[in-house]
Structures are given as C-alpha cells and as structure tokens.
Image 1 (tube, rainbow, N blue to C red):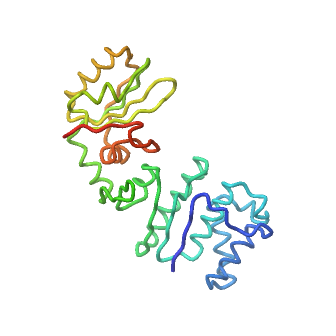
Image 2: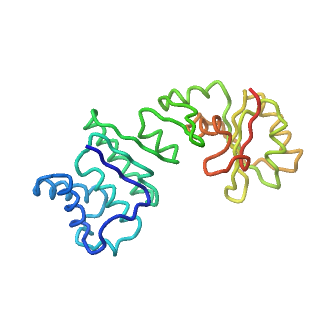
Image 3: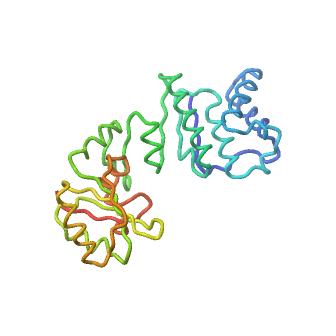
Length: 251
C-alpha cells in the first residue's frame, strides 16, 4: 500500500538486470507474475529504460538507477507514495517526462496520496495541491500554491541584473520598504530578486545601486512565484545559508 522513491538512492542488486530487479520487487509486493512483467514493461518505457532492461545494475549510471527506482516506486500503484527529491540528478528532459507521468498518474488515481519533498519550487508548484514551506524543521506556511502566491500580489516583485561591485546586504538593508531580497551571480553580473512594499520603493533601490557604483543591466517586474514566497518567509534564497544571501526588513 506504500511506495517510495528517494533521490540519489543507490539501491538494486548489481548482478541482476534492470528487468530482473524490478520483477523481484514485484514479487515482494505480491503481484502476479504476468501482471508484474506487464507493469515493468510499461514503466521502463515511461522512464526511458526499455533499451536497458537486460543491463545489469552495476553497469547503470546514477541517473539510470534513479529512473529504475522511480519505476519501482510506481510498480503497484500504491495508496500512499513518498517522493523524496525524485528528479534529482536527472537531465531536464527526463525530469520533465517524469513530472508529466506523476500528473497523469494522480489524475487517474485521485484517491491516492503523494507526499513530495523537493527543493525545486517550480516542481512543487506544478505537482502539488498543497505546499508546506519548512525551514529548520518548522512549518512556516501550508496552503495551495495559488493562495501562497496570492499573498504576495499586494507587494512588488522585481528581478534586477546589475554589473559592477555591489554589497547587497549593506545597500538594501538600509532601505525602508525592502521586505526581502536574494542575490546570486548570473552571466557575470549580480542578479537581485526583490520583494518590495510597493513600486515606489524601487526608486531608492536604483539610486542606491547607482550611488554604489553599480550599473543596471536589466529590470523585470514579475508575477510572484513559490520561490518568492519561500524568500519572503525564510529570508534567503534556496541553497543559501542564513545571512549569506538575504535580508529582512520590518513590515
């Protein structure tokens, strides 16, 4: 009744082929032999391993093992399925294919439950009915993605690219109305993601950048994303440590 796919998992018996490994698990799960073989064939087509069915596990790359583990997790169409970073280590096209399969599977089995953990906010937005944002073991928010994003629509969300030396924390930390920000290197420039109280706060931000010797390369006003929600709640961008790429101003 329960299945699991864990990102980066290196399970599998090396001397068995992909097909044999999945068939063995189908027998552990109590599936009839014919049913198991048909399901394995279907899932290997989904994950792009049909041509590797006879390949021994120890010859598989990490990405191929991840695909095999994904197929194993869906073998029995379980009632509850835990997906822990299921697309980590996969190329873009394969990850997109697997997300499409997850959407298709959930539409065919509306009575089943998937619990997904991911650092990819777009993946959570695409796949989840409800999203919980957790930081250091504490649930900061839990709601539908659209509801979480709607909470930022009264604020102004901008993405800036800036050339030249810049200390974002020193610059933005002193401007009233800058609620949150995150920064990262991008194409030789600095990318700043800003959540402002309103659009009027943008002018002192741009003046501060110019005064600090920075040059504005591009400016984009964006619709709020789940990553913006994450930054607003947590105070730093994904993958950044506290204090390394974000700051908070009082509301």
